[in-house]
Length: 332
Image (spheres, helix red, strand yellow):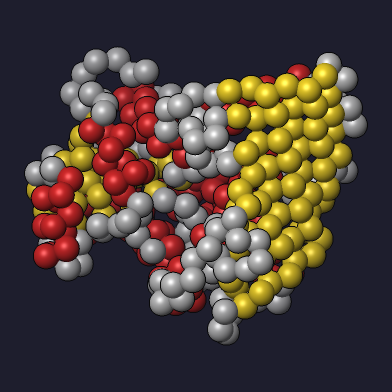
């Protein structure tokens, strides 16, 4: 936990559906941060969002919020294709940035922002909230301990139903697609639990219209020799499948819903030591993420999901699209 001091004043770009769970409620429960403002393209929507969530100020444009001298940091939950543009604008204005995943539309854009962040003294964090929860840390400990033996295979999945096909997540012009939305989790988990950045061996997409994947699967190979598979979908026969499975020569680790471990609250291990289930914290991933963001801004604590990490994730995503014969996503 951070030390007492003035709360970090955060402004939200857009009245996004994810914002209440991802930031507004965790900030309301924290003495270290406050959601001080929101900006929306439709002022009426911004005002309604502010009234509902007790936010003091509403800006009529993203640029106006970013320019406000009394805003310390910006939360960027805009559509995927706008993440890069407004993260760059926020950095140029001297703001710290918590940017929703995927970090950018593609790896080239991620590298551009990583270069800008490297020359700045601002914190830039990609909002892979699960990465900051004790369940993820515990899984890494078990893998590193050698209990599972040498890794053999890492399988990850992020599948959920989104039959509302008018949703922006199906819009190619906004860098949409199942791999971008659901799949960025599966890619990131494969990298984290696999311990390395994998090569893409093959990928298969199921389409919803031209160039938009409603589902994607990919076979992976890691530099150390272990393999992996990821699955993701917003509409497929895998209606709901969220988890990770790490197989070693001497055991297996399973994580049930690692992106929201406060719900099932367990990971299971089977090894030469026997089988067991471990319970984890009920506290939300988003609360841990906010703690980490504030600690990085106020005290220089390390960021686990920094821009360089985002570059690695976007590089795998680009490779999967290429292997599936689909074009890379582009900034809006």
